Amino acid sequence: MTKIIYPGQTIGIIGGGQLGRMMAMAAKEAGFKIAVLEPTMDSPGGQVADIRIVAAYDDEAALEELAEISDVITYEFENIDYEGLKRLTEIAYVPQGAELVRITQDRVTEKAAIVEAGCPVAPYVVAANYKELVASINKVGFPCIVKTARGGYDGKGQQLLKCADDLPLAEELFTHSVCIAEGFVPFMKEISVIVQRNGQGETCCLPVGENIHVHHILHETIVPARITDITAEAAAKAAAKIADYLNLVGTLAIEMFVLENGEIIINELAPRPHNSGHYSIEACNISQFTQHIRAVCGWPLRQPKLWAKSIMVNVLGQHVMPLTNSISKYPDWSIHLYGKAEAKVNRKMGHVTIMTDDIEKTLQQINESSIWSL
Ligand code: AMP
Image (cartoon, rainbow, N blue to C red; front, side):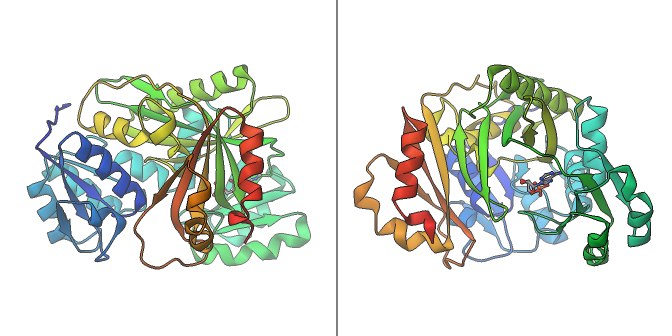
């Protein structure tokens, strides 16, 4: 049953990364208290929490403690222990449930759910081992991408196979998990839709973002995506369909490919706020984090509106110094840094959002800043 959670009550968040931090900051604006469960001591989420539980995500005693002090529990990332989350649903109020995490933790169940929801995916086969891959690869053909079913992110756990001679390159992936092989999609653009839904069934989508990846890591999100209205509508419609099919409560980020003819193919799902939705903090009348908190607290959702076109640029470890040295030059840039101590190469340290009247000019300004050329 959907409960309404009120300011002054405590929201427990599993995970203390930047998504947990931005969720916590949004919740604190409305007067909620925040408890964060996170194994590291000085985490981005822990820094802004009222209560910190420093323990592994599957630590039973820690989960019980979180259940005891929280009026509602949410999570900021999908690789939490499913069994632990399921147990938590029995002893605490977890409106998102555990099913969504189970489905999206595994590409096999995730793809099946997208198909069952009636949305298109790239042709794919499931292979339990290398022999099965070799036997079934002709169903998808070449080029194709082999992906571990579990545990991959930012392009890790993936292997592009251009032709049959490349097949042995994928063998190692099977030491990690079952794999899927999917046909290579000759996409024109990558987009994402963040769909949010509350327990009462109200569903909202943020404006579609266009994602530019560099070395498999999200570099920029351009909003609105430079696609036709028809494609944008199809993307939002597909997102709402998947959200309804999954009985979503909370947030689901849906990554999609756009083909040359404007059609969309669903790539993958993330059951949480997403890097490509950070622009909404400044550029929309509601951020993905505030909407997420509203959804899990049983509050009515607000129909998102874009105040201005915007570009979000990720700040990785190697970008922090050049960015901080340039702060004085860019008064219009909203700078977010997540409070991570060590600026390791390719580690997501923050992001910058720039609202603009002219996307192309701002893309050029970003390039000319030289901050992201390192
Ligand atoms: P994923 O981890 O599934 O999001 O994949 C990471 C990136 O690899 C995507 O953002 C795409 O740029 C690329 N990619 C993944 N799957 C495919 C595919 N079937 N065809 C073409 N590119 C893909």
